[in-house]
Image (cartoon, rainbow, N blue to C red; front, side, top):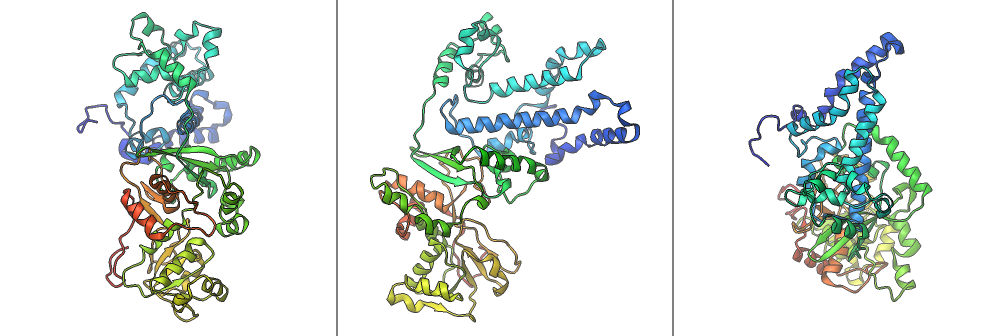
Length: 525
């Protein structure tokens, strides 16, 4: 992209960023005032339907974006297989209502506007223009434009077999893709007729159409199974809204309140149409491909991790039921424990364990006792359960006390107990959910996660509340199993060696979010 763009390159309202839609505020206010003072008797359809038409175009474009992202994640009918990263997403976020300018200069869009206005302006000047006809015409243009750039083939062959001239009257996504990947071919917009006349059609157009339509099924090396958390996480998925999914979900946007009807509708549809997982993301690292499958269920519709352990041993039931299962079940507890342990400042002698319901919390406590770090609990039931798991030679490092409160708090139930923590406490969560930052005089660490290697491709969304290019330890653990070729299941009581998983993560380019510091060094965690 040019460092010093010429005139009419940037959009006039680009400097407004995400507030550029305030440009429409005078139109909205004037329309409301006109209806309030003069009523519907002075109703001007062309003026009044301006904002609803823009809203309709937004919804139409978003449907195509979601459909395209879903199909490209499935990969079966994919046309152009190239990695997408955050830089490209930020550059084209105008399509998803965000702050960046589109990749086409403003002058080009003015030219498009004049070109497409040829069919609308004559009836208007003749006094017989139709608002409905104009809206339908713009909708048709949007439909054809989105279809041509969706990057998956969807035009069925029977349409061209039934009516052969259609081949010259309507283009296909694969036909138009060659206009962007080849040089001086397939110029025609929507209708390939002129490319055939002037011999500018790419010779591989038909072959690419056949190959893309037939498609190929991809068998992933790694599958990460997940589900939605809250209602608003629906549009934080990769197939959701780009301007939201490319940022951590705790970064709220001003139009979030307007999207609640969409979230409720998605929940109802998920409830009606079952619980089958669907592909939402496709990543690649080295020679291994990874897919993310999402279950259409929310936190309040599924059980928590401790209940899952009681019901099926966190997947152990399936491993025992299918002993010849070639798929390895990985809960990621080994790496999650390693990340927590490596987040604890050097020189720590005592930690306070707040909740020990999860496998990671228990494993962390046992590992600390084995390293000579005293673990303090104030819940007698949890203390008794944990003591039975700690080796007898290290049981002296496990202590029950209601009085002692160290400055390092670890666990999965910290939120409700933060008020009892002393000033300067460091909170280290062991769950997949972030802590509520209720104290300004304390330090909050991220839930177990690591930075991913730069070589990992097609990463352009944030995993829930984590920053860009950061992945939860549970998800990374499955990748490490594939990279290292480990054969064991990690579910139930079985857990990978903490040192082994940590070393493998570092070896393959995963980096910790924070470097452990001395407890009294004052280093920012």
